[in-house]
Image 1 (cartoon, rainbow, N blue to C red):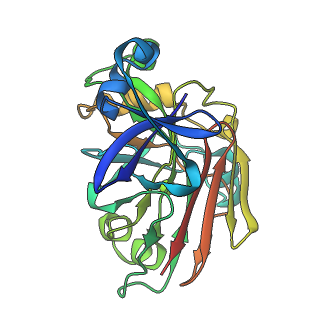
Image 2: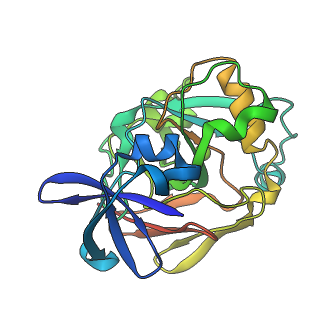
Length: 260
Ligand code: MG
C-alpha cells in the first residue's frame, strides 16, 4: 500500500494512493504506520478522493532524526576504489533539511558544488532500542525515496560532515511510503534533467535494512517516523541551479525536485 501525506486547506492530511486516486484517511501517518498490517480495520476512509496531479505533497513523516549511511553500495565502492566497509559508517541529517516531493532545493551561498544522491529510505513505525535483526521487520513501517543532497566541496573541506549535509531543503523525501515491497530487489535510478545519471539495484547494498536497524538501534533509540537513508549507488554527481532531479524506485514511484 502506498501511504502519503498531503496539504489541503492548509492542513496536513493522510491518505493512500490506489493507483488512480488519493483516498483520504482519518488517522495520522504515525497511527497508520503502527498498525500498517491491519490499518484497514483501524483507519476510516473519508469520502474525499483527489487526483494525484491536484494535490500538494507533504513530507511522508516528521522524523525526529534522519540517520544516513555512507558507502553502502558495492558499485559505489568500486567506482571510488574503496574497500567494502566492515561496519556501517553513519551520520545524521537534521529534520530542518526535510522537504516533500515537488518542493524546491535551495542552492546555498556557501557552496559551489551541490550533489544529488539517490537513496532508498526506511521509515520506522514504532519506538525501539537494541533491536535484533530477526525482529527488525516489526519496526519497519515501510520504505520511501530520499535525495541525500550534499555540498561536496564543504564535505571535503570540513572534517565533520554536518555542514555539508544539513542545509535547509537538503533532504527531499517521499512522496509515498510503500508498506509491501522487497527492499533488497528494487531498481533504483536518478535522472538529472531527463538524463539517467544513477542506475542500480538495491541488491547491491552492502548492509541490508534489517542489519542497519539492528546496528543503529544499538546506538540510539529509533522513534516512529524516523528515517534511515540506506546509501547511494554509483554515479553521484553535481546539480546546478535550474536543474530538475528525479529519483525512481521500482515499487515506490518517483521523487521529483528542482534546484533553485
Ligand atoms: Mg548519502
